[in-house]
Image (cartoon, rainbow, N blue to C red; front, side, top):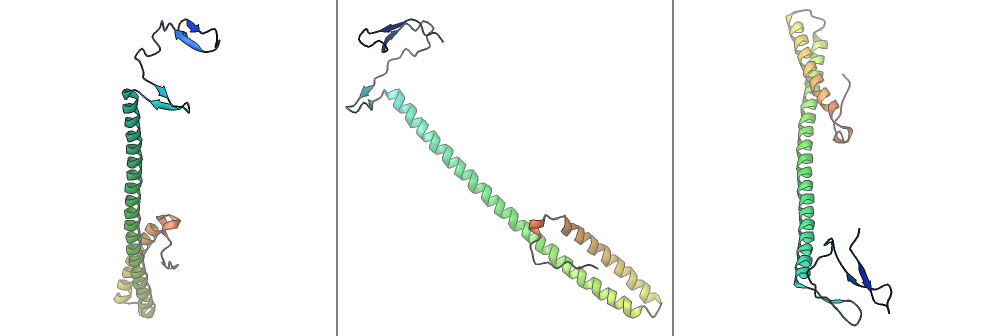
Length: 158
């Protein structure tokens, strides 16, 4: 990048004192800069101070926005997990009730097996219906991810 011709002091051969700035790559507005006795910046132009203040507030705003996003995300995640747990508990109660009913119907069928009458056929139909419902509930439970199955549910083979 060519800034133009450079001018130097002979006493300080590496200190640039002048640049032609033919391509206007260097800002032409003047800056008021002063240094203290420790060679640190003491005074800036008002424009630089405003930019610094804007930058400071923008960084604070982004930080607050980031914290807000984290808080909302965490809140939504907790709500999701709570809802998921409620659904799993409902599923567990449903499964437990169906398993109990299935055992009861199986016991009734066993007691009626000696009699091949109408009551036996009705109970066998009822047993098939309950088993179908039980299979559907078990499929729903099996579809859950392993970390969600940590509820104290007892899944028995039937």
